[in-house]
Amino acid sequence: MINAKNIVYHELIGLPINVYKFNNNYLNKTGTVIDETKNTLKVEIVGDDGNVSEKVFPKKVSVFQFKLPNEEFVEIEGKILLIRPEDRIKKRYKKI
Amino acid sequence: MSRGKKPKWMIDIAKERMNILFSRAEKEFDDYPERSHRYVQIARKLSTKYNTKIPRNWNRRFCKNCFKFLSYGSNSTVRLVNEKVNIKCVECGHVMKIPYYKEKKNRRRTKNESIKKRNDE
Image 1 (cartoon, chains in turn cyan, blue):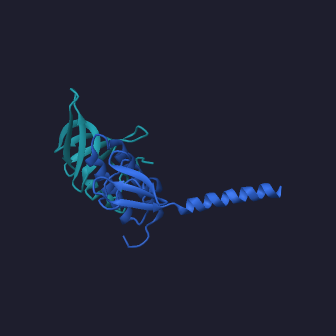
Image 2 (cartoon, one colour):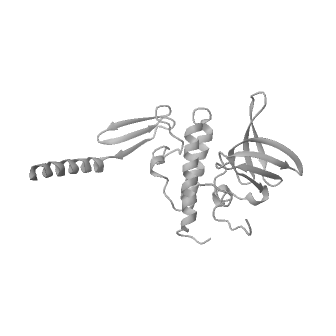
Image 3 (cartoon, one colour):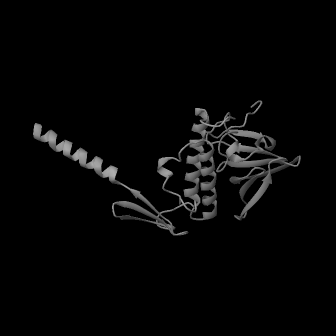
């Protein structure tokens, strides 16, 4: 199961997300993760009037908050995730 | 990381991720079929990178020729022909043929054993 310790190795697609910071500015946009590549995350956002839109956020300059299935919030800097999604399991991180 | 067999905790996480991706693909197929085809692509990459099989209940749910997600009844058909399960992908026309003689053999064996038991008593 996904928890706060192994979220860096685990699957991000399907998790509720809040894009907390973008280019050093506060930008609170909530949605769910649809797709992931080496440098970007694609997020589906439902607006106040019910319109559904897809937005692409670069990982390099943003800070994300993920909501886990056990209703915990985890904040992760995008710089840590700069790697292909299938290679994320075997990368060694210095401190988590 | 060296080649060959990976440590157990890595393989466990890879299996969990494949399960998540396929269940997500089944959920999103009706509205966004391109997303579910993309999830199959990512799951196949995980399986080849960590030398693990795709979980057994999801192994028949994608085409072995064009690697698209198959939803029975909408973009694929299932028929029993010549003692084989024929799964046809409507998108590319490829037919997967899976024999089921082992299941038939097992069923026959259990039936014979039960008859023998009854006769002995």
